[in-house]
Image 1 (cartoon, rainbow, N blue to C red):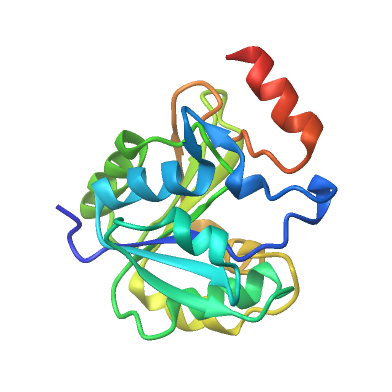
Image 2: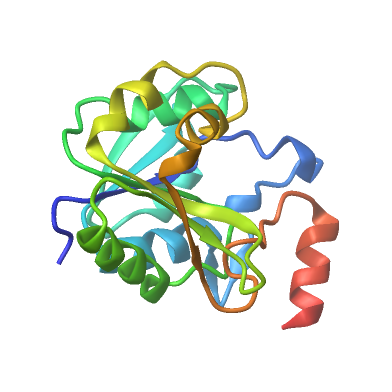
Length: 193
């Protein structure tokens, strides 16, 4: 049950640090990472995914998954992806990054359940040690602020401006902290599995 929360999976980045490979198409348990993450998110609630226009491989990775797609021009910033992703939404949004393979459907369900108890709070996932990470659940009243941010900082500015409303939600181990941006990140992560 989503309780009006839309899950926004940001997947429009260029994978620039992968030196020619697309990190969202790297294989995880036999499927592209993007498909794995979208499946997990769709289990937790309504899903919207941001994708770069013309990236047929990423679009194909979403075949058969119940989601809506917001397309952006290639090379857009994370802030532009976030703004496009929240456009037209009216309820809370759980923003997750597509390159974080440790985030589970259970983690998303937990955050959404906690939002029912504290609907005005910004819920930010954290590592088991309390280190802030992702995903982040934003109440509906902050959609306008998310739609106006600029640059490639994502929602950091909104988190800073509303710091008093941020509640950390520790997830198991390093679920909220592991993101895979480079071939070395992928090699280290695979070696540790």
